[in-house]
Picture 1 (spheres, one colour):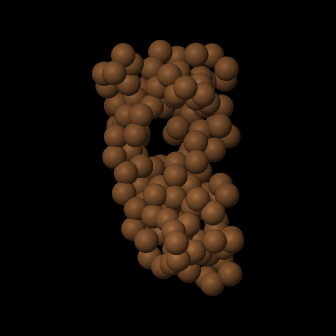
Picture 2 (cartoon, rainbow, N blue to C red):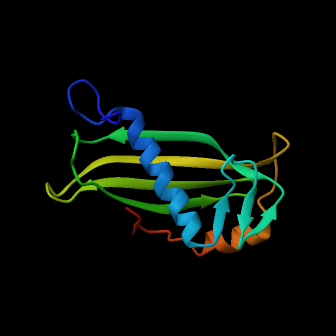
Length: 137
């Protein structure tokens, strides 16, 4: 219920949270995990110096969604830079056959609160992520 407003519609920050969760799931599928405090990033259980932080996000709500709607989330890589990576995604209500929201999140790789070049091990695994829609929820 915390994902809905008083009218029973999905509360707008929930779309970005769900998109972020789908992207983190995409990371896990590829052997990239984050320490629960988000202070370290692991590749195949080996810690790296640094971690990702959200640098920018956007979300466009295309149609209303309500409590108990079943939503499919698709995410893909839009751009990989030296210090950041941008993902895009969309949320679909298949029962109505519509896109309910679209969004993007840019993560910046940091160490000691300064942006840093993304390690090659991470780039290699991120390059294996789709550049077209792939379902995660």
